[in-house]
Length: 321
Image (tube, rainbow, N blue to C red; front, side, top):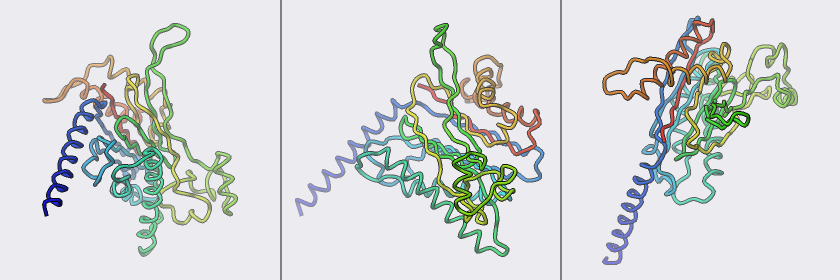
């Protein structure tokens, strides 16, 4: 009995020490803030969806000892309806939390990537199962661009043509001055890309007018059950990025934004507002938060003003070191 009590005290002591170490580590991590703006545009229905979870840590039981912070940001652009995008927004992060590495692990990066791949596949399978059980069967599909922040490392997983781009400050080689550069953190999937077209054709599908079977604009998605036999898959592209003090923010957005903004234009638009423009500061809000919120809202509104007929959803994630 004494041995069991002593063992119990040792376990509780170890847990307390780990919580204390994690608290100290969290205080030294980059501070994240997430902002979102969504516009229906000229569409009859809002088919975009999103999810912002600045702290996902408590959602994961038995978090690995080397991990002290998890955050999650995601945009989903639906087509054929809003059901696939809503389903992904409501369920993908729960699947991710259940599959996230547990306890003391080695090679965390490899396990996190596997977790993302498995979570996308599971979310797609779960939606297709639900869609096929309806009368008539749902034919909705959705893109997905998700950013999982593990301490100070970004993991971006994406399907389709929604995108993630980062603003990073670098030293210009010619002048020596500091300038902001735009880094792509995602890869577009459409059937005009050679590798995507070859996979679709090998599966027995065709590409006409830049679309799968002349209809679907993306070559990877969640849902779209009627195109899965044609080579449309739910395997995301994965990117890993270590945050540094030169990183200012990440922009996640659906193609409704990028139809009227290049990635570089969108980054510069945001930069101009957070560095130069006058913004309204709400009660209890810091100036930095007000600037990023204002930039996020104005960017989405400007996309609509420029004539984007699509739904527009923008997530802006700021970094403060």
